[in-house]
Length: 120
Image (cartoon, rainbow, N blue to C red; front, side):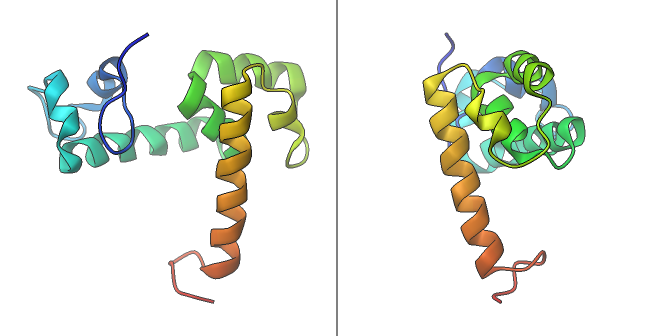
């Protein structure tokens, strides 16, 4: 397993996929410890997961934590129609807990802030 690095805990292989779009063509593993670099690449990665999985935030969180292949496999098996269904079928305990935490925090943020992050 590869080492996670930086604020958004990226593995280097993932960062390499998005380095050019983030304008870091000469990316080295230690560069991921620079917050600006890490956030730039991590933001693109999360955007790509959102594009791939649409508004299925549970699937996005699972994919971010356990990888896209695992998330796709769980998604094919569950075909979720409502919140919580997908997360309950996630095959890794660590990822399942991660998804529940992310979704709980997401709900809190949605109660506190609107789409433009203005306080409600």
